[in-house]
Length: 370
Image 1 (cartoon, helix red, strand yellow):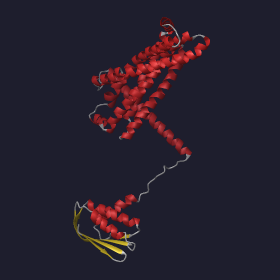
Image 2 (cartoon, rainbow, N blue to C red):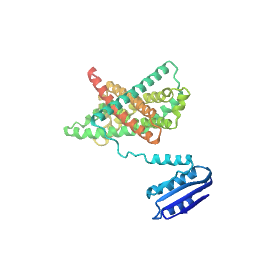
Image 3 (cartoon, helix red, strand yellow):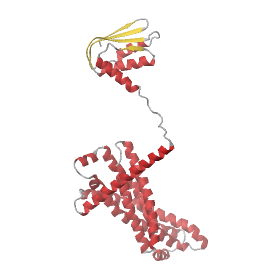
Image 4 (cartoon, rainbow, N blue to C red):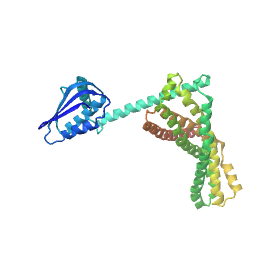
């Protein structure tokens, strides 16, 4: 590399000449840095001694040299360098001099309240816009104009239906078993352990079966929806669908919503059955209740009203889980961390809204006397 280095008592002069294209500047940079590290060096002069052409390798080398000068408080003279090179170096150090905000700015308390209110309003608007778009897709589906494929619906139905049977059956069996065991502890005090069958039958069919299925499917399927659609957002696949004029709600949200709405009542029915079987296991093997007697009290306690209330819970939970999973997937950011946050938010939001809807349904059933 055509560089001439001259050292005086307190000044290092570097003369640049010739072509500087794709050069390995490590050795030259080491030599100049060693000269600058002398205790008596207080000034660096960079001179243009006939530079013909240059690229980023020269800029990078000079940038690192000037950083050493700033660290050692060495004054620099770059006035003789080409204007373009001088401008790039000045621009690079102007970026470095920008202050970095390490601590978030603290706002007054009223400002924080206003900011939270504005963010809440923005979130509500986004949610309502998503619901409006989804209902528009349902309307187009009824009219036979929705842009969706049956294979997507079948794939989603297989994922949230048959593939979920194992985990739903196992958890529901254990919940029924635990419910019967906890109830038996109190009922034994009064010698009424036979009513464990009634307790499990009513509890599982009216609410516990639907809630357990809802929690399982929120963590399993709702998170899956958010992660899958969020990954498509990161990969710009949603942008591709919009560019081709395909509504995202038709193509991605609608099949998943319909699949979960169909699967949830059926899974709730399975949870009711497995919960009563779990309660029967406790009653038969731990409370010495004969199987025919346990069956008799379960049938007597079984009520179709409670059964349909539980199925209705499952239907509503299916809508809630699908909407939460798809909403957070569609509104996901464009990096891996955003996908993780969207998945977490989908599960939390689905569980919270399921509890809220349970409250409304319970209140409504109380009002109409169910």
